[in-house]
Length: 294
Length: 294
Image (cartoon, rainbow over the protein chains, first blue to last red):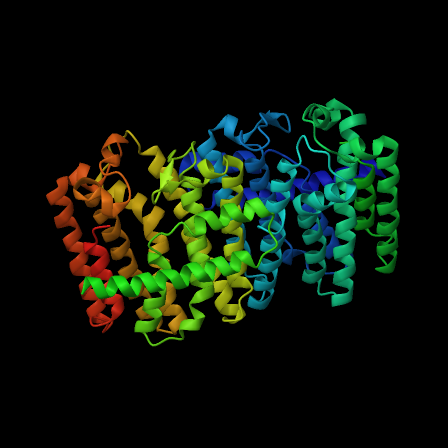
């Protein structure tokens, strides 16, 4: 199973990269600033969010062409968040995905502006698309801004930094992850449903599925930071311990984290079954995310 | 004239500050991050952009209640841009409007996140408002994102930093100002017309008026940096010279800059007359901006 899903994912990743690249390339941006944006946009990455959105639409029989503007906007926001999170005053990371971080390759000011610009233009992507009605656009923009703004991802990154060198509870940890990464993963799946035109009740279930999957993604991340293969991951393992960050494994132990994840996996399976999506590529991807080794 | 317009402006500034403050207060944001956002939002400032928008709507007989969501969004974006521009890696300013800059009062990471959050939530302000139709929302969001993103204000700030210690031409300087500050000033006036429901032709004239006024604003800024009264301005004069920045006065001399401004003032008067707005408060405000001493 994994080799075929990995091939599929690779080709989806290429499509997403091409879609973002061509959008950025087409804009009249000062040369070096554009280079900086493209550098981070093309730095690889799993493209989990846009692929989840696309495969949700596909599983529900929606029109795939209607995915791209929102999927690209979402990945632009994810990319901006990585650029800003890596800054010296934030997580101070010098490498990401085996490459220099944006501010190391360019400079801090350019990195901040590249992030600001990606964030701003993500909303333009949706508002200026010809794939949605005006009502759909304002709904999508509201959800996207809410998931990524002062009460969403920005709050999550703030709380994550505050929690460094602090003892926090599992509930506090989970609140941080819901805000910092879960919100955009939920957005991907919920919005996939919206674009495919599902009922409100189905959309709520998809949002719950996104919530489970966001936490599963993060628990697996923490497990891999202890047990993972550095070569596969493309980053150093054990970095959470050396950064004195609270993680699922530091709070629950590795076995406890695995059991905790298993509860969300069971919930995820239940939702997929309720939505009659057990046999979909989307379901395969959900399982792949929960068992990923990179 | 000036004392009465100054009283009017002061009361408008209070209304804008209250509108932004109550919006931010109502959101469930982590305490210190919220404090940081409120600190910059309440730091005073001329509120030129939202007031221009409001007075344009008033001059054209539009519904004032429909101004606020977009005016607040615009001022949130302006505030975010000041927070990020002041950062050590950008303009490295320690004081703004006589107060510590956000990153000096809090810290760099918090300042970056406060800016990111203000930017993101500005789009939520418009998309989630009950004052506009969905079609109006997506139009307003497109204009706002375009004026402030990778081909607008972000590009302007980038080019402005690149131009430091460089000899640039008056055309290059004007391009930077159009992107960095002119775009949002134009947005204020153009959007005021849109909200008031003017014709497309009138909207284009309003955009031109905004373009003139944005440049007039900047030329006057440069003149005040040479001739201004430090106590009135609340900032040090001569800072452009000591920062080796190209300005209207460094390129054209003070008299040349005044003559250059006068050409835009004449154009501005012509547009105001074409729009039959010569006797409006908006026209008074335009003249006030071109002659301001603070």
